[in-house]
Length: 170
Image (cartoon, rainbow, N blue to C red; front, side, top):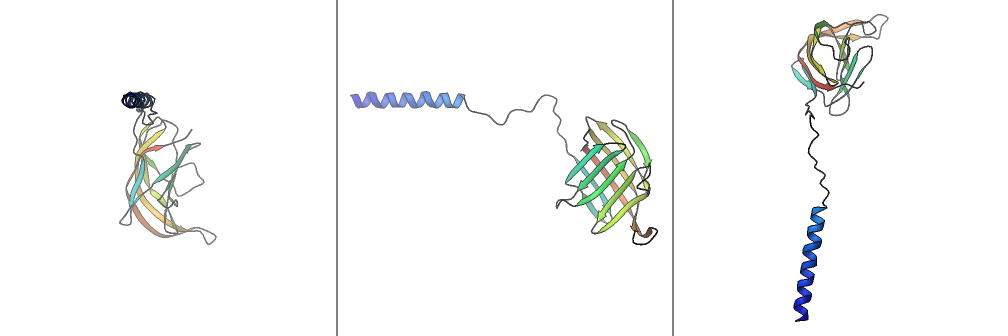
């Protein structure tokens, strides 16, 4: 008889402890905060018949909006300095080959070659909550800097350039 009461007591204790542990369970999958947006940030373009897409970014506001995009191995793939201010929308703004100037620049790295967009333009179509979206295209030039003056050694078109929801730091 005592054995039966002992079994019931142990079973009751297990049920009580189990229900107490379950109710104190730490749920690490809290629902997202209200008004939290989901972003799909990317920068991609077609160049010389190849599709390129960055896998990570560093972007911040300054005298221009600076965006550097990296490929999967962590190498720089694209580097932009866009003449725009926070929350500003722009249409068909020109790129310049003069990286030290006041205009916008777009630089791409393919292998060991550096290409700059000279005859092209960009647009910023969405710019809110420190996120930047838009498009770009134009003719890019491979420039050789080994001599006294830079020399254009090749050119090709950058097509279908898109940046979407790039996070920009203040």
